[in-house]
Image 1 (cartoon, rainbow, N blue to C red):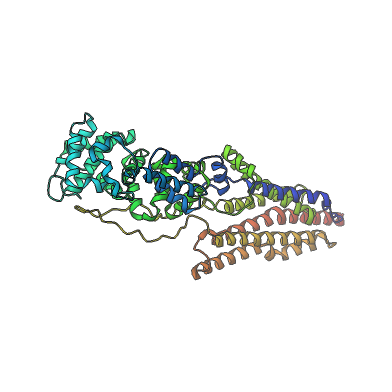
Image 2: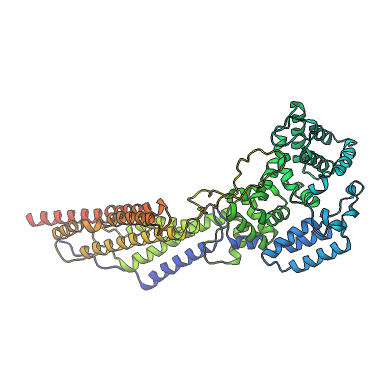
Length: 554
């Protein structure tokens, strides 16, 4: 009978080196502010560093005498305490006092002066929706005469839609009660004539007008007219021009009209983001996708500067507010090399978990019968993959769930004839895009239970392996501990049942991942114990007992 294998624990220095290396790798990986399906606040700050602030952008608008847009930018800057907001407010007041005729229209537009005599608007002390000026018959008659002489084919195509009587939600412009439709048609033609539309929007609008004229009905153009009516009731002339100049298609116009109806209190922020990022399309897409949570993410980006807003809208992902260490240089690296930083982060989690487990192996366990010296490397690697995956889930709260049901999703509207009724905001939908804290804690707790169970099983195997009993007795003792070695399954099933009960009782958020992760960890634990430890140990004991029997019989 062979002697027991001596205890060969690692030296304290080696153990400490493994543990320290593991901790450093995990912390370094966690400090990289890069995520697959979200963006971190520190990365936004790095992107916005050195770029214009909202207040500075508003001051540029004042310098160009665009009072209307600057006023909305000021309202946004005040919501998050931009330090340049007071100076911007003073600049707006000074310009309004010096040129009060600019206030109602939102700014200066040279070719509008002979049409509407802008100097008569001095009595209006605030920004005025542009449709207010176009609804009177005298204003529409003046505008019709002016646009009739336009040599633009697009303007003429839009004017021809005024004579169409096949409408759906508008009263025809030529019939009594058709003033809103005529005002919107003239407004769209005036925007086209003044080149206040983006080239792609001009092209699409002209195509819709020509199709409507050919088919003798407004058709798809009517949806655009409704959206323009909604925006014209809320924005002054310059505000509307600046928005449509940054809008690429009629779909985005419809999305902005929808956002203006369902989130009127947030209109200054939404408008500011469109001008600040120079892309109304990306802003609309982001908010339609993420709803009220997207509003807060956009507000955070606006606080950090223009670069932060453009980064957030370019990636079209939510902001991850998962706490963690922050290193300025790490944010810069993640901004310059996002893919390399993401790979480095996940690899750091894997290597860090492996080093920690390897250090624990060397500190607590020594090779016994059936445990080859290289086996701890393999077992540490397997568990390291699981722990690294858990760390990734903790730092990637949006990885396993799709986009939530946004409060701003487009919905069908009922037909109306003259007035465009305001739709009430949809019911608040709870944001389910992030993995809530209780779910993460549940997964972490179940993983910790299985790691503890795994360590208990290894201690028992080591205890039997280093005992002084004969091989057959050791084999019987190993068989006697089968229930312990299956303990991971029992704990896993119990954890799943407990999680489901807690979800039914409302203690934790309903999430099958939190429940069934316990079973997954249990199966993995038992597989590691039985396949990687118990089986080799039993094989060694069987061979040892057989060899002893042969020697004794000889």
